[in-house]
Image 1: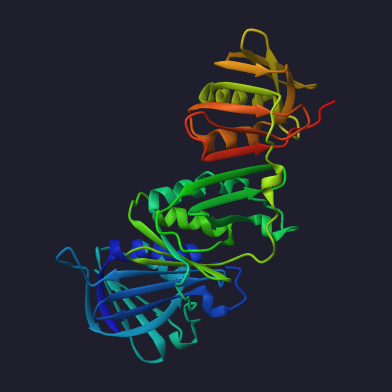
Image 2: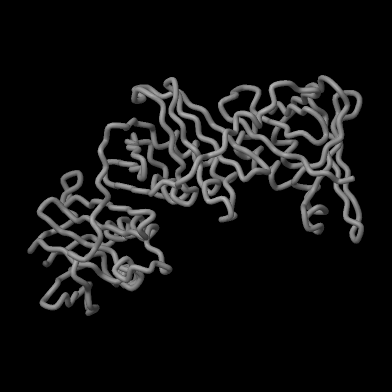
Amino acid sequence: MKFEIMRHRLLDGLNDVMKAVSSKTTIPILNGIKLEVTEEGLHLTGSDSDITIQTFIKAEENGEQVIRVIEEGTIVVQARMFNEIVRKLPTSDVEIEITENFHTHIRSGKSEFHIIGQDASEYPLLPEIQDDRNFVIPADLLKSLVRETVFAISTSESRPVLTGVHWEVKNGELTCVATDSHRLARRKTKLEQLPEGEYSAVIPGKSLSELSKILGDSSQPVQIVMTNQQVLFKTSNVLFYSRLLEGNYPDTSRLIPTEYNTTVTMDGKALFQAIDRASLMAREERNNIVQFTSLEGNVVEISSSSPEIGKVEEKIKTTLIEGEELKISFSAKYMMDALKAVGGHDVKVQFTGAMRPFILNSIHDDSVLQLIVPVRTY
């Protein structure tokens, strides 16, 4: 195997597949990445057995030769070492040659590295996926779905299914829900050409976060294929496989209140900044709690106190307060995360009482819903 490649294109591909390589793997060959070069170009594959990423670099792009293939072949090289070497090579051209016993020679300018590779036939094959349940989603919408939900997953392994986001396809609509049992994030979106029937999957939050990084600023369509154990996200040059989480995701629809005693409409950005300031005091306390109190004249007060340091109070004008007076306490971090997900628009916050979960969403768009469980402070 022997080929020459533009260094920046090789680095781009490595940046993607390295996201799937873990130093904690129990399968030694997964410490490596697989290189497979053919006349068409170079396939790079990285995996930790939960996530597998394969990226393809075409030999020719937009009439420009990116790879010159001298001899086709395949090899597995130690991922972190190979990545570091390529990153530090002195020129923009790289030559890679494999000789007998998997000896790998990497040349660039006057620099030459020799590393020992491994037999690629021992590297796990890509999962086989039947694409009977597939649909297409624009990359920017997919990134929004992830950004608006994945922060609310659980970080505790005591209930593994809650460390993922529940994707459900039903009646031509995709609903994504994440919860750690103290808060919930839900995003709904209508999609064209969704497959018939109802089905759902719980996708690990970690997988979705890594996928979002790979998509970058792309607005290309992403094909999504779901099976019972795997999901595949396919772009023009990347295949991203993730295993699904096992177990039944709780029915979260019952958690969302249908009646409200108090509704506050206000500028989301002003509320975010006031809570951010109040959390300076709250942060000194272990649980980072702020109070939200409705006052007369469409005003709310955001306050927080710490016995050792002092207290902060800030009044904010709202657009409208309807219903009963209210005093409620909640985690500053949870509320700021929720406001970030909704965006800096005018928001509607709906309360059912001081100790019942409350919801917030944008007044312009109810496709994103955030729910937070309050905290008892007395």
